[in-house]
Structure formats: C-alpha cells, structure tokens
Length: 364
Image 1 (tube, rainbow, N blue to C red):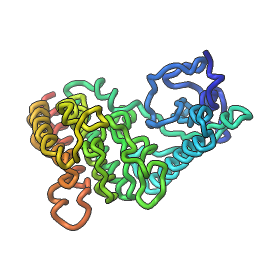
Image 2 (cartoon, rainbow, N blue to C red; image 1 turned 45 degrees about the vertical axis):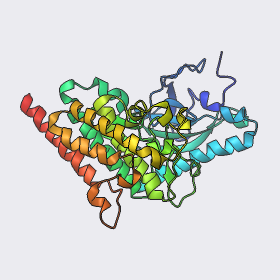
Image 3 (tube, rainbow, N blue to C red; image 1 turned 90 degrees about the vertical axis):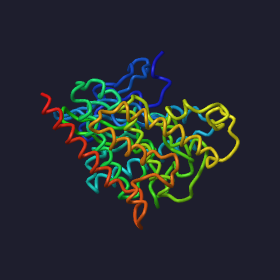
Image 4 (cartoon, rainbow, N blue to C red; image 1 turned 30 degrees about the horizontal axis):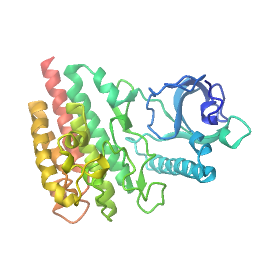
C-alpha cells in the first residue's frame, strides 16, 4: 500500500513552500502508506492531512486539504467545489479573527495552495497555524492532580473569552469540544480552534443549511430531536453556550453533557436520529430530559471540589439547560439585549480559577 492513489495533500513531505516553510514531518500517519489515525489535533478539521513545517528554526502546523474523496465522487466537480469552498470560508473567517485580534482563537499564520503534481487532485490548499502542545482532551490527563482544577478552570475562562470574541462578530463556532481547544506552551494559554464548521450570520457559508454542523456526539438535545429555531442567536449562539457548559461536564467527569443525557433515556424516549422510537416533538420530550438533566447536575455537583461546586453546577445548569429559551445567564435573559452574552461566565470562571490558584498555594 502507498499514498500514490491519494490526492496531493498526502504527498507534500519534503516540499518547500514559496514563503519559505519546509514540510518536514507527517503527524500521526505513515508517509509511505498513509495509514494511522492518531492525529495530533493542531486545529481540528475535516478532509485534512496534518504536517509539521519549519522556517528559520520555527516550527508550525500545516493542515492540507485532502481532495481524495472528491476524486472518487460520482460528481467530482461538485465535490471539489464543496471541499474547496469550505476551506475558503474557513480561511475567510480566520482573517476576520486575525483582524479583530481574537487572542483566544487559533488564527492562521498563512494560507495558500501548493501542487504535488500535474493533475487536478494533486493540488492541495493549506492553512498554517502556530504549533500547539495538543488539545485539552489529552493534556488534562497529564496535569498534576493538585493543579488540575486550577488548570481546567483557567481553560474554561479562556474558552469562554474565545467564544465571546467569535460571537462579537456573529460567528458561531458550532463544534466546540475538548479536541478543539488547544493548549500552548507550559503556560496556561488556551485557545479555541477549528472554525471549519462555523456559521457566520450575514455571510453565506457551506454549512448554513445544516441542522447542526458540528459533532453530533456533543450536540444540544434539541438538535437530536430535529428542532429548528429560525432565530440565528437562539439556534446558533445558544448552541455554543450549551457546548461551553458541556466542557464543565467533560473536565469534571470525563464526558460531555450529551452522552450522559442520552445514556439515561429509554428507547421509547430517544429520537429516531439515535435509533429510538420517540415520535412526538422535542417540546413534548423536554420534561423527561429535564428530569434526567437535574439528576446529572446533582452528580456533577458531588463530583466537583466543594470550593467551586455550587458556582460551577449553577453555570452548567444555565449553559446546558435543555430548554433553549432558558439557556444563558438569568440576569441577561430578563433584560433587553444579548441574552447569550458570555461576559458573566467569563467573570465567574476567572474568579473560580484564581480561587483555585489561591487554595493550591495555601496547600503547598
């Protein structure tokens, strides 16, 4: 087996880009066979092949766009258009983030296209990003037990800042999950990554018509029951709030909110999207889901450190409420304005992180 039958994105090792970056390593896959799936998640991403690049002693992460699936599609030109349009849209959003100086969002150092041969499939659009140490899904396991609470509270604070920065430009991430939050260096530097599934209000994008563009394993429950709210903020920003709250469950228990909710539902309560037999609306299912959500919050509260349990359980309750109309901070819901603002949660996570730092210092 070799990479000969694959698109040009798999054949870039050893090439030098016009800007001076040299492609020096593959990441998580064999350059001879193309096999391997344990990819370092430098930015997240779909239809991409990861590499390490180097220029003037500086290393970075290159995400090359894989056109292999398009070449095997019944309608090659349409498939190519869909993949390259998604890449162009992501690059466009990244330029907006860079221009707005969104320091809690991973932005591109460079974008372009390189060719590994004469054929159409040999072309490889790419993005280059600052090289991270890895995603929080893996990094949290390597943090000393005594520092772990402080570590992930700082992560929650910076994730919330990153989402707020995106929301300020009406960009909804839609795919926030542990593998899409990157940690940089030995400092507590966390940034939201992978805008490949994002939705931007007022700007046409490749995923606008999808019910949900992110990972369904983390999707809010209303999405699983195919409830569509026509309002952009409720449907998209409210979804991001849920995904943010789900990160609390992940850091505290190892699992996001959605899989824990779904595991409690009987077949008759599950929607057809999850091979269940529920045939009514999400509104009708909500009392059962709220009941299980209350149980889940109680278990979360008992898992958390008592010093932060009350505040974090309340935040998880507000951010992940199964009723989208009740999602967000209560003080923002009762006044005219942005009921999906994250400012209060940014302050809460910052305060709790500093409290955890103090408790650790006193214990040492």
